[in-house]
Image (cartoon, rainbow, N blue to C red):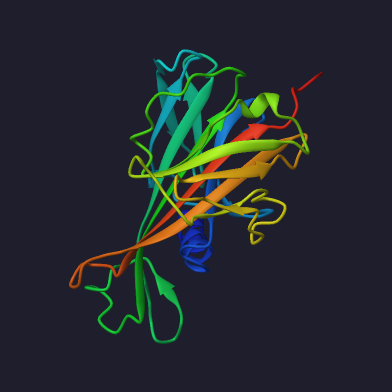
Length: 240
């Protein structure tokens, strides 16, 4: 099998293992910011064209130009200058589950006997600089917004967050406080104002995650939309 065909087949298999369980976050690796698609400690290859856009901001919340470099099996984000915050969106497309329980990357109009269907959208917000002012995050349909400076909290202390769904406070959203270390452990659930308190778990990278499903109208190409969002930051400043 040709190497490019092998890669395409491998990517399809990896993504279709579980269409909606995986999350999105950004991580600094080898001097670059990578968009990571995974679940807990699992980090998968993905089709880089699924990263639709990235937004970088300076400390005042003003936009910083950022490009998305799409490599063979992932994407790298390249802001023009070091950002105070960065957001990214991934559209994982429509997925349908066949009667044999296998998921395929098509909507239910293409899979006539589908027993489940969803459109999977994933978002991430990273905070890199203490005191960063965040603009309105309308580009993120689901967002975890820190209400105090996450870089000043410290491991073992409490961070207040608010979850916004389409710009409005979202109640009863479960939050995973350590998506990498304990991706299935709910740390808190948002109140009627979309707010929750999360204990900062790690000295290094913290990944807080939220997920929700939105039912779609009868006759829509999918039965629901599946939204995932993460908030990432370092628990303590990095020292050489």
